Image (cartoon, rainbow, N blue to C red; front, top):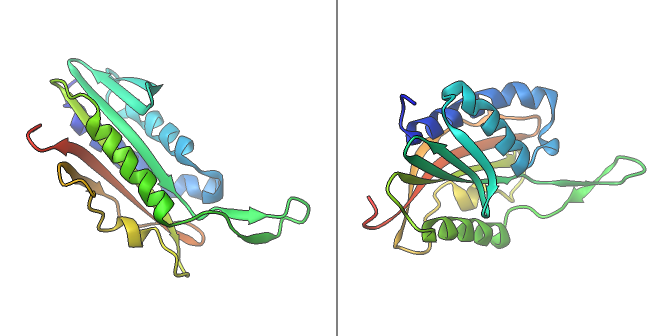
Length: 186
């Protein structure tokens, strides 16, 4: 393992984001979810470093990476505007869920739980956040997450990477990689 685990997480994030536009031409965004996004992240991990061991859904952490003496906890949040369809006609019948306080509270809980996990030497904590907003429309995830600040001032959420917008058919996807630190943990 020639790179630090933090560098490996950042490189894997970049590779996953670079891969997305081509994959979105094959499988529309409607067929993606958090697990699919995590799968593509894990798929690109060996291309960055063969010596990293991934553990999926490890004690309620989406992805745990082990490399040498280092460990990384990675949580994934993937928000889209899911459409409802009539099963007989295939006609769109509006949206289910979408941006709002419920999603925001879920994200805040995710960050807080990651922050609250015991820190040990060589451990880093990350959140991969991706959200898609329709090109037209007023209800947007970006209103909640573009300039997100965590509600607990003891939690530091540092933006490590932010991808250029990824255009899908009717949506624009924004993806960000954060590290989670508490004051005094650095």
